[in-house]
Image (cartoon, rainbow, N blue to C red; front, top):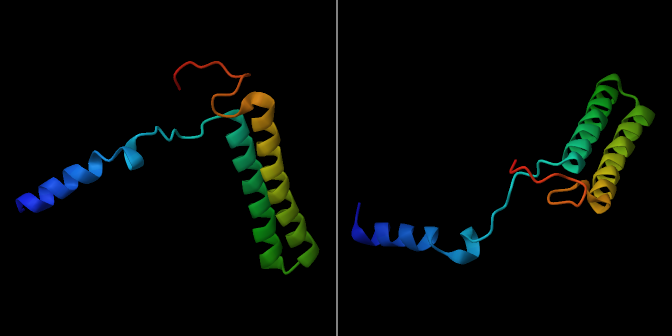
Length: 91
């Protein structure tokens, strides 16, 4: 490995623009609710696709959109990451 490769690797890892902020994992009631409801909607749509039922497929898509709306509403209500309704225990 040459010295230029090592110095380039150091420059990339010390760049504050790409590594300065903690991204987190999104572990919150709002995120979990959003994901679980959207998974149920995807399951409904997948089953409807296999049995060739357009109305049920559209219903599954509607459930997925409702999951997005539920997650957004819960985040605004304080149940998102760093929300006012959550205890900050470090997890």
